[in-house]
Image (cartoon, rainbow, N blue to C red; front, side, top):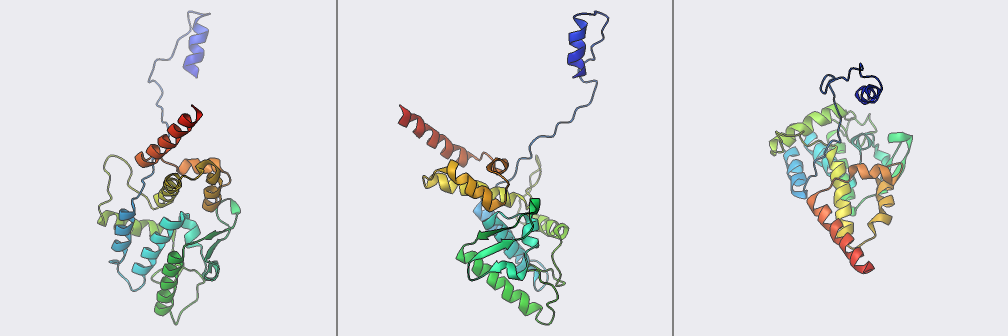
Amino acid sequence: MVRKFAEFVSTRDSRTEIPPQGIFPTKRRGRFVPYIYSPYEIWKLMCACRRMRGSLSPHTYETLIGLLAVTGMRLGEALNLNREDVGEQQQLLTIRCSKFGKSRQIPIHPTTLEALQRYSMERDRVFRHNRSTQSFFVSQAGTRLLSQNVWKHFDQVRRQVGLERADVANPRIHDLRHSFAVRTLIRWYRNGEDVERRLAVLSTYLGHVSPSSTYWYLTATPELMALTAKRLEGSFEGGL
């Protein structure tokens, strides 16, 4: 801004000094490019969790990663789940006071509910004499999981399955949320659905304030771009 202003002033006063390029360090923060997990990679992560130490940790982290992958929930939302938030009769999860202080209910697939029920039974078996916490997911000590510990254990299983990238940032647990959003769009495009209209549904499911926030999660993967281009090409041909 200073340089541009100095260039303008120099047209009126030749004594004006224009700062040279590079005199001020600049740091631009670009958009973080998320990693889109394939179903096979998610399966490998869950399998790696089974080799963790402890009587409950393998079940906890396998179920947690699976739940994040099939619902797109924020990690904090999953860790804040209480036992009564898993509605077995309605096949609903109740997410309370998430980001922006809002609560919502999201439907889950019967197979997801079955996985949560299996974990619940294993959790109660391990801690049958100690149910002091109402948390759905609990640590090996029987307490609510801490996000920093989840990040640490996730990085361990990520390295075990070979998900390392030397050139850019390594895949994160939050990228499971991005992956869910992208896979949902791909499925809608394949089924020929009106993606533009259904984007509001995805936005509500993810807990976004508006669909504009959801666009942040929609990374242009080759498959998604090919489906989008095919849909756009069809609309042009229809107009002709």
